[in-house]
Length: 447
Image (cartoon, rainbow, N blue to C red):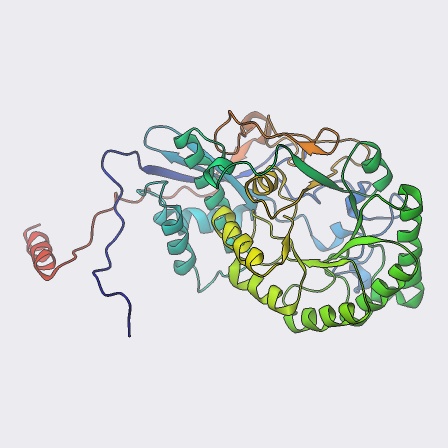
């Protein structure tokens, strides 16, 4: 029996408050790194994992010889950032971003914008629900959810500007004085020297390298443990390159050799939920103390519920991909209720704000984007003119800058809007009684 016992009415913005008048989606045609994938770098950059410049990096494609030598070879950076502007009738503009390029621009401008324009920015949950349900036949995960995430982030940025408050204040306020960060890097020793609270480095070899490759992985990790000492936290990023048996063997060997890992990240492909459950049981049976972490390529509360059910001990949602701030908050609540830890994946300043807003999130990730991993540079390159940077391992977020406190560097980005849709008509209330419906029919018949 339905619980919709009353009339189900449309949400109509109050006439005395501004409404959203435009949704615009852009890609960047910048001459330098900015508003592109983090892998959109030269082959000599550490993140590409191309010998002899840097150690190799295991990934989902290393099992194919043709694509094993460089991440660039299989097009990891072919889909750049999508940047969204949402403008209100009083001129305030919110900005959001995700991965998606021109394909996401199409989804945003040609479909999702219709659920945003004409609405009140305060109705974010209502907007999110409509976007999600209307795109369910082609969305749920992947690129279309990235598009929803970019819109959602822009809505929260705009709401912060409407309220003249930082986004973390809208989510409940500060839970930390500053945001502690660990570094994702190829040089944990430098990360330690400049004050980060831990370092994550990529695994060099996958199962296709055989037993010899597994031993090289153990030796590689052991060398870093010896260089940074026994107390500095180290984490291992496996980037979807492994399988259950290999991960269990690797974790056991590394623990036996004293590598002392805080967590082992994303060893399996994200949709292998049954494999995640088997691995969680294996690691527990082996007495592995490192957290089993994953989730950067998962989406929505339903996906994370499956990971929790599988026994994953540390979730790593990316607010720019998994559904935006609105859905991120739901996942944090779900994880907290089940006693599962959360540390946001990447996502730069957006991750810092999530860490600040939720007491159950202990730290944030900072990606070292300099070529030799020896200089602290903005995670988003030239995308913003005021992206906060860590000092001695801490990010300080301003309390007097509304929204996410970011300003697009439009001069450097050279923004291009591939699609320009017709703005939706202002929202009108649908008839809610038989009399109103009849009256509406009469009015239409007279037109």
